[in-house]
Image (cartoon, rainbow, N blue to C red; front, side, top):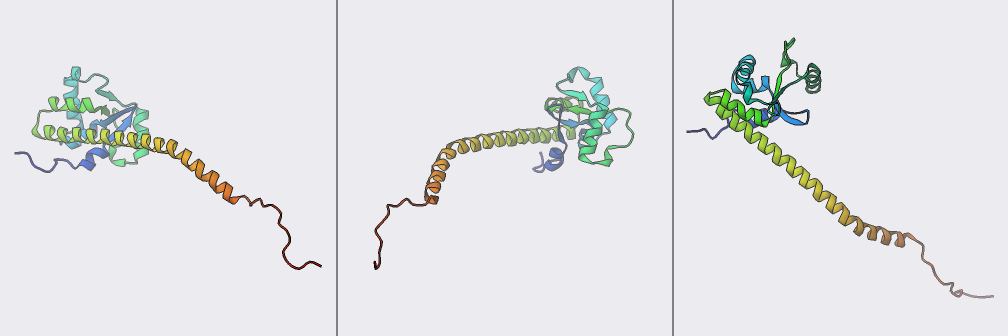
Length: 171
């Protein structure tokens, strides 16, 4: 029977999703930690099944990309000198990992990762919808505010009165 609690906290998964080369990805060493395996074991399993990981499922970061990512996130625990830059797995690549890493934990972690990707997509869609609604409101209310501003301008102008006769005593 599956536990009602996730194997890995959602926050930990979401913190490991990055935008690289226009793709939402997870890095090999983060995935290895989530699956409870050594990063080299994960990479070896992938290389033994490389036909399952086309370029839109997985790619290796350049040293420059990795250096920039490390400096942006400011995490020193990503290892000192590495022989090779980590691999980045897209959502499809992460899904394929469950067929390569055949453990119960890998399956459970993959389910949680897929849920995190779905939540992320829903959040992005929600933000896009909110931006569209805001643009629409802005267009609609600009006209109404223009009327309001015109009314305020009219109130600010001094009244034009016809000259009246003098009031008071005349000499």
